[in-house]
Image 1 (spheres, rainbow, N blue to C red):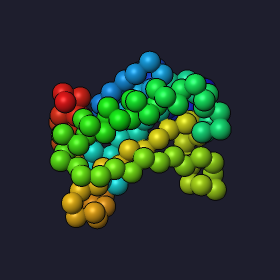
Image 2: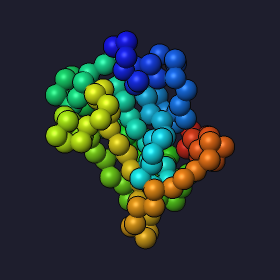
Image 3: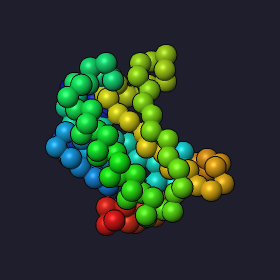
Length: 131
């Protein structure tokens, strides 16, 4: 879709701190992270929400997410993770392009909403990619 921010990101028209890519998904650090290492996983094709995502992509999504979980864990020492999707406006979805949140949690268990500089964010993305 022409006006979808995630479609523009997939096409390289908008920069991001990419941490991974598979055949049908890309992942990058969230601009407003709940915790350090919070990433988004988006479909390369435009599907408005979970209902539109083809079932055949489920295995790839889980496999890709597990790879990312390992990388984020090594790069940040995260102990636990939350994997979620907001599907539909009433569920809190703001960008209507299927996307998933992978949110790391640390031994304290408290979300910190970190304010990282652009340089710190780029270093974190590199650390995750390099794992």
